[in-house]
Amino acid sequence: MDQRLSTLAYMLPDGIDAALIISNENRRYFTDFVSSLGYLLVTRKESYLLVDSRYEEAAKNQAKNCKVVPFKRLRDALCDIINSETLKNILLEGSAFTLNNASETDQLISSTGASLIKNRQLDELINKMRIIKTADEIEKMRKAQRITEDALSETLKLIKEGVSERELALELEFRMRRAGADGVSFDLIVLSGETTSMPHGVPSNHKVSFGDFVLFDIGATVDGYHSDMTRTYAYGKADASMKRVYDTVLSAQLRGIEAVKSGVTCAEVDMAARNFIDQAGFQGYFGHSTGHGVGLEIHEAPSVSPGNNFVLQSGMVVTVEPGIYLAGKFGVRIEDMVVVTQDGCINLAALPKELIVL
Image (cartoon, one colour):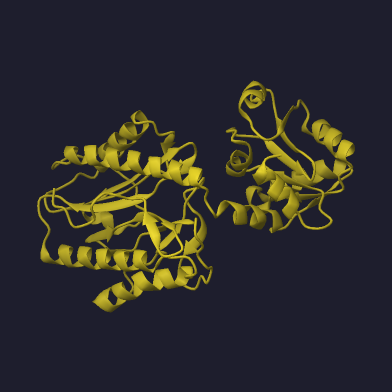
């Protein structure tokens, strides 16, 4: 087994003989193999990737750090491994299962003579490993960020009165994929005018008008790793109220970034940004967390939110994305993705953040 798998095997609690992993992201994290279905069984001696006929050839050619076990009946394949290694207690990756799936898997494992342990232990062990990013993981996110920024820079040239949010979102995705992205990190958020007041609004046929804010919350994936960035621009002009809100959000975001470093809690980072917004007279207009972890998933630990006393460590990657949202008028959000270091952070975003009037 490689270091990741051997680390997981070593960290298994006493009395546990193996771990059963099914989520796409965690199977990819340990084996580098991408599939919509599969079962990774990690024992203290070996790791087994169980796949059906759809993925057999690809898994044998691409999967790393594991034995590929093709199956026609999952129960038979599991039973062979459980008997050969005399496995008694198998820890389940709980967050990846629905209630129905957990019940079915419990019955399946029980039928092989082993017992399935259902709690949060395995999820916590894997999260502890994934939360600190390697140099290779950070480089993939850095590449995804560059692709995102280049696509946005090109798409900004297309903004004109009458272009729709949906058209801009489609242009962005096309440019990201053409530049080498696996795909987009999430359904891209492109909003204009009054729709920018909805933090997670959906691009529609709403058209850009002179004097609008245009908000882009976007990201690309490279080898499964995500980027995440938000920029807000003004089209044609920005009035005094728009400038005041924008400057407040930017100042809050810079304070949040300045607070990021190893040893600081997530709540302290959130407070640095949130307090500035509140003191500027916009209390209650910033409802979401200041940020979140990023990696193989667009939202992963830690949550940079009020009351979260989780301590940041070097190698974590988080976003800093405060905003102000005035319902029915407009909203502003600015977001960068940063790598936590011992003395501060490294900002993976390079696009300017001062207010730009297109």
